[in-house]
Image 1 (tube, one colour):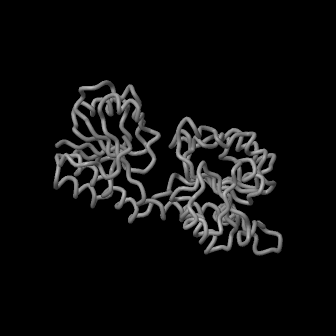
Image 2: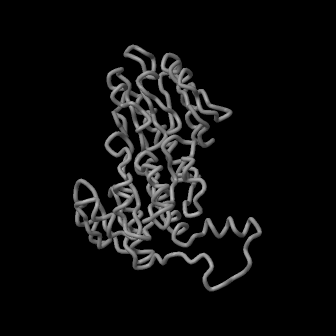
Image 3: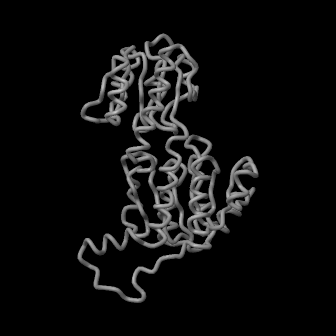
Amino acid sequence: MKVLLTRAWPKTVEEYLSARFDVTLNENDAPMSADALSAAFDDYDVICPTVSDRIDAGVIGGAGRRAKLLANFGVGFDHIDVGACKSAGVRVSNTPGVLTDATADLAMTLLLTAARRAGEGERELRAGQWTGWRPTHLLGRAVTGKTLGLVGFGRIAQATAHRARHGFGMNIIYFSRRAAPAEVTAPLDAKRIEMLDELLATSDFVSLHVPGGAETQNMIGAGELARMKPGAILINTARGGVVDHDALAGALKDGPLAAAALDVYPQEPKIPEALLAFENAVLLPHLGSATEETRNAMGMRAASNVEAFAAGDALPDPVA
């Protein structure tokens, strides 16, 4: 069975798959063009894409092509046209669960970096502009005892809430379509807020944990940002398209936000130009799952789906 990895994967996973299948590696780790991805549907049985690959209906084409599985490296799959895959008879899998802790850790990293203005301080120091300690220098915001509002309350949001509640004594509120079970919320003393506007207005920190896609596109726009608590901080480790970045630039410049901390963007690797000039914007290059342990686990989870497909078994992590 011929398998294509569209980007460089952890060596351990590449070696594991190469020992079992006819695997083509991306040795230079350059993103593949749409034409190259489309051609791969005729040359390979399995394609293993990542978030950097835009696999739309034009790339997928119609039924009858060779590729029958997209074993995605990552939990998010809004870069794949799942409907077009179904029409073409192509299965899709992802890698849920294994990146929960790493992404929750990064959400807290962003929260703390923005709250304590650590990015500004490091830039000042490296530029040789630090003149020494003084009582009013780079005053940030305390985290302990403050309210963290979570938009979405899946695995990563819950893990973030656990860190915030038990590590920093934060008050936890969340907005989601369905109430979480008591066994989840009770240890966190978490309260569900039924209206997004209410959560935004009462949270000192708002962390986004919703999937990408049409339903959440620009979910946090000018109106939502205007309703946030003065001095609040917005954190996004979900998908870049969830936030209207032009509106976010306005909220950072004129209020009500004190800061924003982002790990994801709508057109990666392009960063919204409007945000680059703001000292109160913490901007990271999509590091949510970027630990050796997590990326290896993601690769092995994708590999388990490839193996199941090859054996004719049910996929462990089917998306479609």
